[in-house]
Each structure stands twice: as C-alpha cells, then as structure tokens.
Image (cartoon, rainbow, N blue to C red; front, side, top):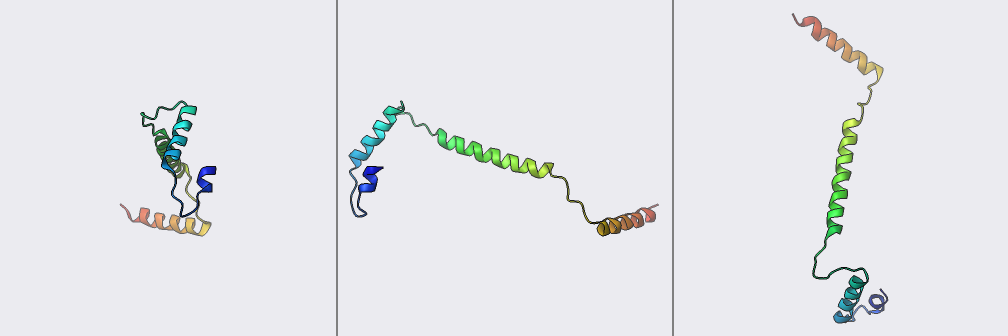
Length: 87
C-alpha cells in the first residue's frame, strides 16, 4: 500500500515491483499462483443466493395484514349477498 500511495498521479508504476509484491503475498499465504482459485466469487454468489432465498421465505411466512373493521363488514355483506343468490 505504501508503494501505491507514494506514486504520483502522473507516475508510471513499476509493474515488476507490483507483481513481485503479489507473488510474495501468495507465497506467505501458501497459495499456488498456477491454480486459479476464485472461491471469493463462489462465496459471494452463495451469500446472494441465500439472502434472496431468505427474503422470499420471509414473504411467504408473513401473515396477511388484517383489514379494518369496516372493510371486514363490507366483505361479509358482499359474501352473504353472493351466497344467498346462488341456488
């Protein structure tokens, strides 16, 4: 980070130095540079999928909002009218 921050806006980075820093970091963490390991992407996709699944399940589990008493009475009256007109 110090190297990157020390660069001027117009300055050209030393790419060999940058690559060497990445190589050293990978060696410190016992990562093989020849094996492309993109588990970070898989983990992110898994988390997004789980979040979507949970939000859908929350919607499914949510109880319907109770309507006010006037609307309930009007619906009951309408249902009684429909039921009384059917043979």
